[in-house]
Image (cartoon, rainbow, N blue to C red; front, side, top):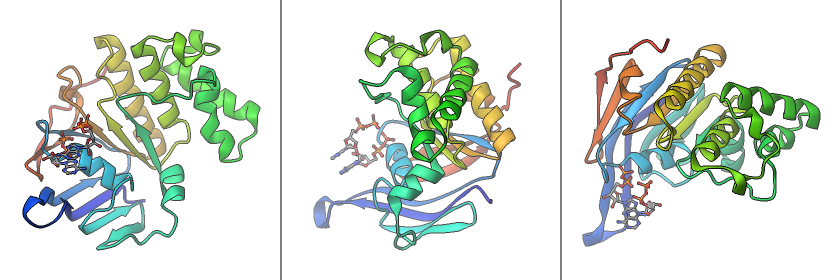
Length: 234
Ligand code: ADP
Ligand code: ADP
């Protein structure tokens, strides 16, 4: 695949005098295997960009390509947006949204199960990620029994378990301490290089910003690319 490509993306909310152009022609490219940061002040358009890429809202104009597939070209090219979201895109949201009546393992194993992987194999896949995120001791717990940081790690495992070609992460490390935040960054980088995943991380987290090799700054609906420090993770 060719990762993520966005060209001239425009998103207008509302109409006429009260219209807001949240994205004013955004260009962005994330190669397979790459983890890039997306940084910008509140109201700059970060959520809007992630929602467009995640096929959660409709862009107004522009082009988006995921892998080899043109998914949007001044209109959706994909017939089944639900299948696109389920099979191609891993979401790691700020608020974990775990399913309250499933335990930790089944929250993570649910997506592979729905994709047709046998239950035992799906649970094994879930447990491997939970172990990498150092939360395997909570595998049998219910979401309501977890701290905010623990819930966030479970939500990260869930976003990664299907090995989607694209991962969109919105403040994935916000509630985590330094060691756990760096563990999350390491897992995202490992995922990217092992499975050739293209990953966009929206973040304000000063602990992890120095780890990106490339950063997009967004301001007032326009992106600017810049080289990051790419500081080593070990
Ligand atoms: P960020 O995620 O960087 O805080 P947003 O993408 O949420 O930025 O918002 C970008 C701009 O679009 C802001 O001016 C915001 O008020 C506006 N906006 C976001 N969502 C909507 C909406 N549903 N309707 C109208 N305006 C919106
Ligand atoms: P986030 O935590 O992602 O930055 P916000 O708190 O900015 O989200 O916004 C919460 C929700 O309200 C989002 O779905 C966003 O699209 C919507 N929203 C943001 N700004 C506006 C606005 N000016 N008018 C209507 N909806 C908005």
